[in-house]
Amino acid sequence: MGTRKIGRTAPALVLVTAGLALAACGPSDASGTSGSAPAASSAPMTSSDAPTPTEAPSVTATSTPAPATTATASPAATAATGSTVPGCTTSHLKVTVQSNGSGAGSSFFTLAFQNTGSSPCTLFGYPGVSFVKAGNVQLGKAAARTPASKATVTLIPNAHAFADLRTVNGQGGFDPAQCQLTTVPSLRIFPPNQRASVNIPWNQKECVGSTVQNLQVGPVHSNR
Image (cartoon, rainbow, N blue to C red; front, side, top):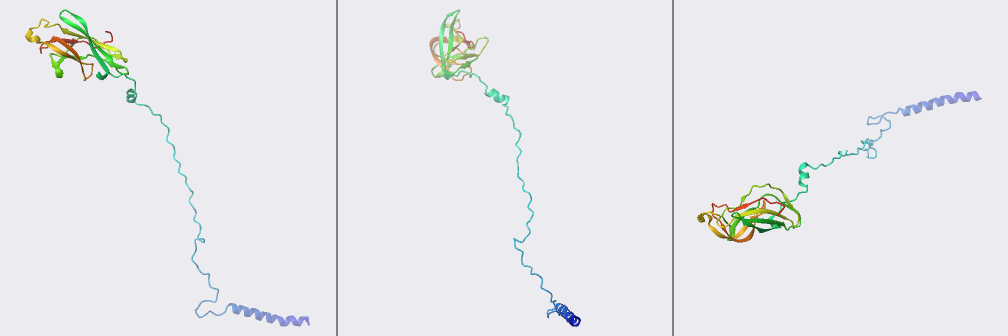
């Protein structure tokens, strides 16, 4: 009895298997497409779906410091900042004159230059000297320079420098027409290397003729 049951069941299994195969290979639909499953829809790719690009490695800029340099003053700058004593200006000088007597047809005087400023200053060379009347109108020739050695005189506040002055006594043997003897009101003095002058009362009779050299002056010096 067991053998007959196995013989009847086998054909049935074969038929079922064949039916399944025919169903899987069924006819195409009216549109001509196969009966296979439709492909997956190509929906737009979102940003979350996009592949992440590879970022370039970041670079940090670094500046290389320039080599340190040492500032060196130029010779001109060094000279400009060096300590020097300025020349005495007329506004910081008190000028006086002292008579030293007369002889051999001449009168002798000493010009004194006192530093009235608050800092040292220097004098060098010859002062300018002439006779003048009202309005600083010059009378006769300006003083000639007596040949002598020159030196710089440094004056601390209240210190003095000196210069020697000589005039001709009276007519001094000159022809009266040449001498033109005149009472001179003032003596005008320019300190060395200055354009401003000072006047000292004079009120003495002097030869002021244009051909007469009635004044001679020496350079400044430190001793009276």
